[in-house]
Amino acid sequence: MAFPSGDDASTDWWRSAVIYQIYPRSFADSDGDGVGDLPGITSRLDDLEHLGVDAVWLSPFYRSPQHDAGYDVADFCDVDPLFGTLEDFDAMATRAHDLGMRVIVDIVPNHSSSDHAWFQAALAAGPGSPERARYIFREGKGEGGELPPNDWRSVFGGPAWTRVVEPDGALGQWYLHLFDSSQPDLDWTREEVRADFDDILRFWLARGVDGFRVDVAHGLVKAPGLPDYTVEQRAAAAEGDPAAQSPHFAQEGVHEIWRRWHDVVAEFGPDRILVAEAWVQPLTRMAHWVRPDEMHQAFNFAYLMTAWDVAELREIIDDSLSSFGSVGAPSTWVLSNHDVVRHATRLALTAPNPQGHGLGPDSPGLPQVDHGIRRARAATLLMLALPGGAYLYQGEELGLPEALEIPGDARQDPTWARTQGERFGRDGCRVPIPWEADAPAYGFSPSGDSWLPQPADWAPFARDSQRGRESSTLELYRAALGLRKAHGLGTGDLTWVDAAEGVLALDNGDVRVVANVSGDDIPLADLSGEVLIASEELDGALPADTTVWLRRG
Ligand code: NOJ
Image (cartoon, rainbow, N blue to C red; front, side):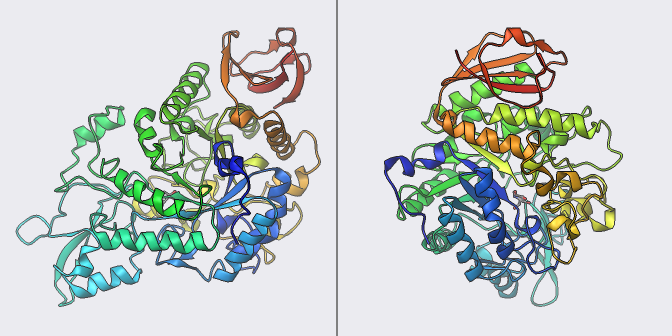
């Protein structure tokens, strides 16, 4: 069932929407197998409506052997039995629409699972076949082809190439996988690949989805000839040198694909959208993904990666508004997702933690849990005051910190195995979320099973422990979302206001937002106006790591 179309304003819903990411494996499990599922999601949608979000985005629930938690898709048009059936999907989407929430689904076009029928056919058909042409197979280097075709590295660690055994039993060609070896990259220079994905988009649009979050939207097209990406180039790129462009990410050629997708999505109405998951820097370049005839939104990872620091925050907010604004797109804001350390831990870390490395119990620079949560609440209240769209990740409304105590043999992120335990990976932000303090698996699963172990001290984070408790993080989010809507902050304009050192102050419509990013309390006399909401109790001062919204006098 499609979302009931409304007036012109409703076609622009995404420009200011708050979109809540559901990670299906870890949201709610209805059948007790320890993995969340679609009926579980349906049963908990009322809680999201109560929270006040405009839309949900679901990470993949498609048929998959689950080597990368479903981002390894074996059938793009079916639901994995682990998560339910297509009918369960329809029931979930109908319920969400009935509650007034849009539904965005993930789509993973850069690669398929190695279990996909396309890849299995490619393996069976052998070198030079049209079946192999769907993927990126190459001969190896060296006398016997024993070396990979180039020096590219997998994002999860190790080489980005795997050699296959040919149908005749001999070692043969290599295939490219920018992620796990179970995720072969598709060859997007091929028209049949493009045409198949047009149909996949139409399949889900016809089922009523309101849009797609597009995985690895900076991938898909590789530099012609697949040139090496030298250590020096990688180091220069890591330092932010835009000239040291990766030969496998952010290639110009991806844009014609997004223009094509834009048209396919538009066939189903002006309110269906595409959201880019693209790790591209700087933001002026990222803005190319959201030109008027390409995608509608892109995740603002530059904002997510910004430290809790006044100067850096101000600069990234300005940059975001001007870069996205220069192409007529709204900025987005995001602090957490299923790939990054939860912001209730990340923003208070005191040691560097490169993206994707994750955290364990003895990682350096871990903050006190309360300190991290306090900072996260302040950061969220700042984010929700900014004009544009905002993304929330399940569990952040409960103030969940990163789960650190996951034994090695329970870890599932391929990063952990591919780096022989050198990087913890992303499991710490993916632990099933707590609903009920006193129920098995905190109400996640009726059997008490959980595909990743839940920390023993999560009862206070459970939704039922927080609901109706005024000072709870859940009620802070709920109140902030209500006020954001009531004051039109998502569609507003931002003006900076002079403030004391260590303090960020801005006006958006009739709301003044003051974030104390410094370590010192600020006397409340400096703040005029009625307090609408504050991330901590004020008690005569604006304490450190606290954000307040005031009604402007
Ligand atoms: C980005 C997704 O968010 C991540 O979880 C996944 O591992 C990679 N893309 C590969 O699909």
